[in-house]
Amino acid sequence: MTGLSTYLDRRMWRILLLGAMSGFPWVLIGSALSLWLKEDGLSRSAVGWAGLIFSVYAVNFLWAPLIDNIRIPFLADRIGHRKSWIVSFQACILISLIGWSSLYPSTDIWMVMGFGLVIATASASQDITIDALRIEQIGANEKSSMAAGAATAVVGWWSGYKIGGMLMLFIADWLEQAGHANYWQLTFLFLCGFVCLANIGLMLIPEASADRRIEAQRLAASGLAAHFGTSRLAAVGGFLVNTVWGPLGSFFRKNGLSVALTLLGFIFLFKIGEAFMGKMSLIFYKEIGFSKSDIALYSKGLGWITTVAFTILGSFLAIRSGTVKALLFAGIAMAATNVMFSILAWTGKSEWLFALAVLLDDIAAAFATVAFVTFISLLVDRTYTATQYALLASIGTMGRTTLASSSGALVDWLHGDWGLFFIITALMVIPSLILLWFIQKHIPN
Image (cartoon, rainbow, N blue to C red; front, side):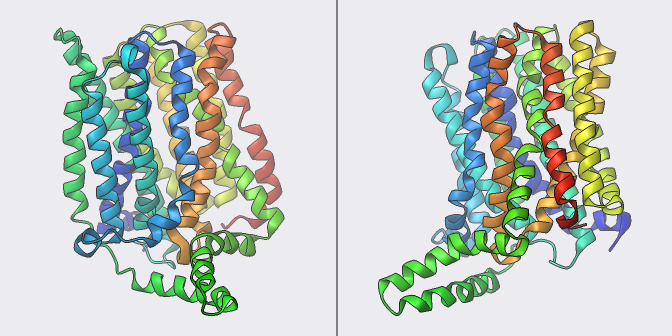
């Protein structure tokens, strides 16, 4: 299938839901937590450092082999290996939201961050199996469908993040205007309903049998395990091959050491500037005078429309222009749109300029994300789908989480000079584009 008909495939609707379930937790530990901490009196630096809980996304590949291989008793037989893990992690998110509903950051900061860490860990862990289930919905040889699936996953992720964030902000603003001092706590209880609805939809997604994957992994493990004889070392060696060496070795054998390391460097650096900007964006909007409803309307509502439209358009352009050109254009576009926020900072509160900046930023982010997801998806070895995708995605996330947590401290160090801050974030894309130039011949097109 090619063209628009690819997106009419019922598999794309399943991928859309999976993407939304992946994006929604970022509303909780990103948008909601940041504003909740700021409105309860914490500093920009504190809000930024709170983002360290996102670091679990950077290391989720460490336990990806366990999720890829261990079956949850009873539940896996009933609803499938992948879905049983997703439901379990969703339950953790639900419990944490209920826990947040009785806490206040100013007095319970460690409990607040503890539940935030549980949400982040559950979200990062479910992404391992969500990505695997998403990739396995499409045949390995369906290249155009793979790109469309990546675009649909991005649309789903942004839908979960943007629409979920818009509803969250509207609910919080409405409750605050109604005079509820605990408006954030009540908002978290409302959000529990969205989690439950998503899991009902999850049950409608079919999951293929894991027999072929298990057999492929067993055969890969038997080669090295044979060297250990029939002792316990054989079992240990087989497990290590199956869960650690297999996925890593496959990636390095396929690309070679130098190219593989350069690929990983590019993945690590590509979206750091976007992450620095995104981490502080809501704080910036509040400081220059926009309300939660304004942010919901422009940043989330308008942003969702443009993101969806240009993610789909971006997938067509990525297919036709090739991976390298798509990534190069996306990097330049992300840097250029960050400069728009510098202009907004220097001119002051302006609704039309806010809308324009958000519009252009979301267009660039949509194109960059679909090109990036397609790029990683094409690198994955189907024998180790979950583990290898999680490894590559985690390396990309590492830069966007660990380094970007210093964004608040950077703004404070600049004495609140938001314009200069956004200029610096625009320049952060340059190192990744240099690496892209060197490895362009080795990137799948």
